[in-house]
Image 1 (cartoon, rainbow, N blue to C red):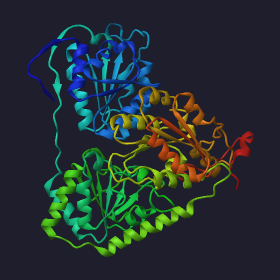
Image 2 (cartoon, rainbow, N blue to C red):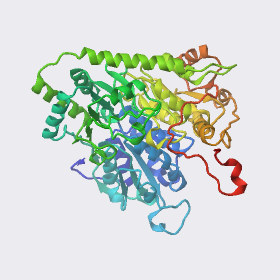
Image 3 (cartoon, rainbow, N blue to C red):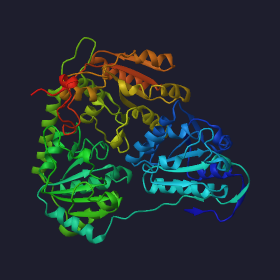
Image 4 (spheres, rainbow, N blue to C red):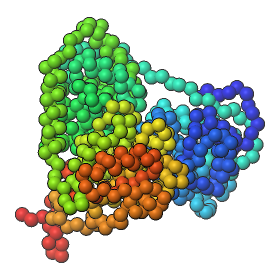
Length: 577
C-alpha cells in the first residue's frame, strides 16, 4: 500500500473517512449505529452517500451487487453485535462470488471487552472462514493503515475483507498518513506453461474453452474472444457466469451446470483438450445434468486461475497455470500464432456448434408446459422475460426452482451483467444485490428474479428502493410454493408437502403500500409488456407474476436416498418396495 509521506493531525474518525475517500468510496450501505456515529457524521462532507437499509444482511448483499457491477469495492457497515452478525450470510455469499466487499464492523469498546456488555460478541471469529483478510484495529493510530489494507486485499485477492474497530477507537487525536491505493498487475503465468498450453491446443482435434468469472473480473472477454476465434473453439460459460462470453457469438455454447445448456454440455463431452479460463471448476458446475455425464474424463485439462489453491482442486488437470485470465488468453493466442501462423476458420466445427445450439433451442420450446387460468407456465414466462429484457440490463437471480430454470434462458452480451447467488445459494439474495448493482451502475437497468418464498426475506427493501429512489424491477415468481424443496418431496417423500405450500398476498399490492409500483401479471402475453413498462418507468417496481406450479428437475439426484424407517410409528413414511 502506498502512503502519503507527510503525517497530518486528525481524529481517528477523520482518518477512517479519509481512507474511504482515498479508495474511491462513493456509497456505503448499512444501518446507522451509535458505535460508529462519530465517523458516520462525516460521510456527507466527504462526498459519501450513506444508503440506509431495512436489514443489515441486505446491506452486505447490496455491497456485493455494487462490487460485481462496477469492479470497485462495495462497502457495508452496521452497529456492533446484532447488526454485524446480520452480515454473515451475505458476506459468505460475497466470498463465493469473489466480490471485493469491505465489511466495516464496529465493535464494543476496548476497555470493556470480555465483560459481556450490551451488544457485545467476538466479531472476528464469526467471519474467519468467509473473508480473505481480517484486521483488528488495536490502536486508533492504526485505523487508516488497517482500513486501507482491507481495501487493498479485497480488490486484489477478490473477496470480502473485514475491519473490526472498537467503538472508542474512533475518538481522540492522532498523527497519521492516509494510505493510497496502487495497482497490482498480474501476469499470464509461467512462460513454459503458456507454451505448453499453446501446443496442447494447437494439436487438439476438438478444443473447448470454459469461460469462468475470472474472465469478467479481468476484463478479458475481448482476449478470450480472439483466442476462441483463432481456435474455432466452442466457449461454454462456467456455472452462473452466463455473462463471461457474448451469447450471440457463433462460438458461444451457453452455460454449464444446473439447468444450463445441453448444447454446451454435449460440446464439452466431445472435447479432447479443455481450457478452463478463470474458473475453479466448482462441483456444482460440472455435475451430470439432464441425464448427461458431460465432463470429458479423457480430455487434457488446462486450468488458469489467479488463485493457486483452486488449481486442480476439483478436477484433475494436465496443466495448471497460476495467472490472470486476460493476460493468459492473450499470451496463449500469441504463442499459437508463433507456432502456426494464421489458421482458417474450422467451418465444420462451427457448424457443429450451431447445430447443437439449434437443437437445444428447439428442446427448450418443447419443454414449455401449458398455461392455466390466470397462471403462466414458468418456462413460457422465462422465455417472455428473456425476449423483452433490454440488452444492457443487469439481472440478479435468487435461489429456487424457477430462478434456477432461468439459467436456461439468460443470455448476455456484456460482462458484469449477471449476478446469481452462486455456490452459497442463499434465499433473499437477488433483490438487494440488484439494488446495489443499480446504485453502482445507474446507467443500466437492474432486474431481480425472485421466488415467492425468497421474496419474503427481501421485500422489506422495497422501502429502501422507494426512499433512496433506486429504480430496480423485482419479478416475483408467485407459484405458492417453496419449489425446490417441494420437488424433492414429490420425488422422494410421496408428495407429503410439509412446509412447502405458501399462501401469499398479492405482492404488487404490498409494493404499492410501500410506495412502489406494483403490477400483477396473469397471462403470457402480458409478461414482456409488463417488464418493458416497469423498466421504462424508472421507478421501483414489483411485478407479481402468477405462475403455475410446474417444476423443473431437482438440482441433484445423488443427494437423497429413499426414506427408510425402522420404528413402527414411522412405517407409513417409509419408501414403498
